[in-house]
Length: 176
Image (cartoon, rainbow, N blue to C red):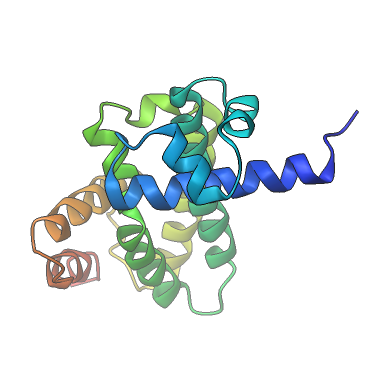
């Protein structure tokens, strides 16, 4: 039996509100604050997410699902070079969500292995297409690209809103 339409909507509202409020204020925000932001009662939050850790995990999984979908969609773009760099910029911009969880000790271990491998596969597809188009260094591996992405996230984090560090890092991915 599938869930009622209002239950599905409420779960989506809770996830969206939690993602927004956790990114803005950190994971110490109370479940009651999430419920208020979602416009639902706290019982609704707990019905969908019995513990706060369940809610945090669901928000992080939704974030990575969104990144995977973005990477998969972007991989089909006409210009693979522009596509990979646009994806990397968006991934850095959206990284605040993941950084909040990492700072709270809820890093990638909160994700299922299947989610991590889907993300890696999508990024690999993007990278290979960009390399075939001559837009990215041929010697770059997926592991290296993911490490560069993580470094760019941290570089921008310490640059007080200046996106220049990640752009400099990404320029280093282009062929010589």
